[in-house]
Image (spheres, rainbow, N blue to C red):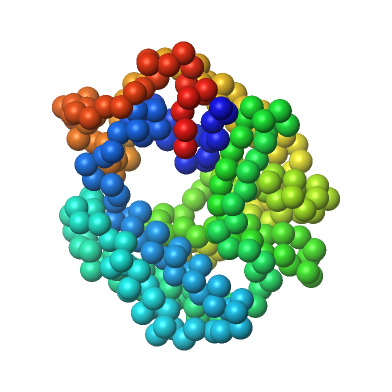
Length: 276
């Protein structure tokens, strides 16, 4: 069976092959499942999705209703032991950040009549037409703009830092979604990539040429080939280690993997057996 990749899976391999192996091959359950930043991101995404669903129903929630939904969802999915790396920050600090994100967004984009047609749209992308190289993803919000006659892929970011121009121009995730949208609706449509940086209350937009998208396909195919031919998965230290849910198992930090399921060495090929 062909493995279906995702931007997150590809990025994990590039960031740390050891983490990739633990998560996707050995399917190790981490002692700590998530970070407070990831939790914040999930709850804000859930709340904005709910907001647009209500708008599509013909309802415009008040800001009080939005914060009520956010608060309830925060409690519902919060996991005890969530990582808080920044010792000068508390759970309440992160909760309040989310409140500010939502209030700023609400005041800026109300009444949200921007042509949204789908939320959390699942896409499957066949990179070479053979079914061998497949990716899946979820678009936070898909918009059709009748004035420009183009589709817009909207993505919410809760990180504090803004990307460089180079980062925006080379971002892989939304570019892959751009390919999928063209496959679904037609190659002649332009696709506007839009990132909402909620901590700064701004949006950043970009587009990709046909040549750039074709080059991206080739790069992803080569990366998948590299992953599926890899036999050794070394741990790589980086600034992201503090947020890693597998840090306690990492050899760089004196960790030992105590739980193990079947991994790559138990099978003749990774691609044939690994499941999502």
